Image (cartoon, rainbow, N blue to C red):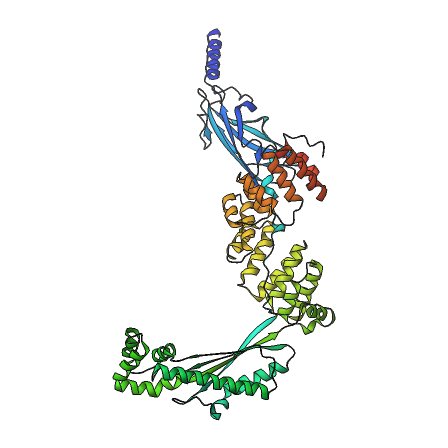
Length: 560
C-alpha cells in the first residue's frame, strides 16, 4: 500500500514538473505590449498589433488558449479576431509556446472606429481548453485610449462637381463672301454681287444694324492676284482689286444707312502662292507632284512662274483649273450677338423665368452667393428643362452644400438617368456614397471620374478613409482644404499642413481644431489653446471632444 502511494505521488510530481496537469496561471499585463500606444485610427479603423512575451514554465503543454482582444468604452465594446495560443502537445493550428523556454505570440487587432472610443481600454480575454476542461482566466489590460485624428476627414466639406453653362454674353458670328475677278481685271462685276454668299452677307449686316441685341464689330477685306504674270503687275492689280472692293462696300453701307460697323480694314496679297499650293494639293491634276516639287525647289516668285510655264501641258491645266480661283477679294463681316445682361436675367427670373433658356438659368445661378436663391434657380431650371441633366446635377450640388444629402442624392440620380456616362454626375454620386460609408462603390465612381476638376479633393478624401495617406496627398495636389491639411498632418509634414490650413478660404471649427492638433504635435501650447478657443467658439461641442482627445493629453485645457 505504501509503495503504491509513493508511486502515485512520484507520478503526480512528474506530471507537474512536465507542465501537463497543472492549471494555467493568470496572464499578466506585463507580458504584453501594444503598438501603437495609445491606439490610433488609420482611416476609419483602429488597427494595432499586440505582442505577448510569454515566460518559461508558464504555458502548459496540454493547454489551448483563445485570446480575444476587446476594446471597451463608456457605452460600447468591440471584439477583435480571436487568436489561438497552444502548448507544444496540443494538436491544433495555433501559435505554439514552449513550456520550457516560453515564446512570443502576435495578436493582430482591427475594428471599425466608433465615436466614444477616444476614452477606451483595450483588454485581452482568455478562454482555456485543457484536455477538455474549459475555464476562463481574468482579462488583462493591454492598451488605453484611441487617437482618432484621421476620422476628421469629411466628405461633407468636399465641393461637388458643377455642370457648366454654355452661356456667353457676346457671341461672335462671322459671314464671308468672295468677289471673283477676270484675268488681269479689277472691276467688280454684277454677277459677283448677285451671288448668294454676298447677298447673305449684306442681309446679315442690315439685320445686325437694325437689331438691338447685335452690333457689327468690323469688316475686313483681303484681295488677291493669281501668281501668273510679273510680280510688279500683280502687285498693282491686287491693290486695285482691294481699293475697288473697299469702294463698293463703302457705297453699299451708305446705301443701307449702316453707319456703325466697327472698323473697315483692308489688305492685299500680290501673288497668292500659298493658296496656289493648297489648291494644287487638293486637285486631281495629272502632274501635281511635279508642280509641288517646283514650288519646293524655287522660292523666288518669277523663277517659280518661269519653271511652271516650261511645263506647257501642265500650265494649261493650271490656267484652266487653279489660277481663276486665286483672283478674288474676300469680304468678312464680324457681328456680335449680345445676350441678356446680368440684371436683365435676374429680373426675368423674378417675373418671367420661362423667358430664360437653360444656359441662361445655369449662368444666372452662378451670379449669387445666396445658396437658397441658387437652389430656387436650379429647381426652376429642372422644372422648365427636365431633360437637361445639368439642371439636376447642379440642383444636387447646391442641396449637398446646404447639407440636404438625401435631396442631393435624388437629384444626382435623376441626372445620372439622363446622362449615364457623364463624369461630373459620376463623381457626385461617388461623393454621396463616400458620405454614406459605401467605400467600395465610392472608390469605383470617383476613380471613373478622372479629369473632372473637383475629383481630386473627392478622391483624396476617399483615400483618407482608407488610410492611404500618400495617395490622398497626391490626389489633393495643391488644394487648400481641411482634408488636404489633415493628409499632411497624418504624414507628419507639419510645415506643409500649417501652410495649407492657414490658406483655407472659409475656415470652420475643424480648420482651427486641426491647427490645434498641429500645435500639440509641435509642442506649441499657445497654438493649441488659441485655436481650440476659436474652434469651440464656432462649434461648442468641440470643447468636449478636445477634453477626451489624447492629442492634447500633455496640455492643460482647463482655461478653455
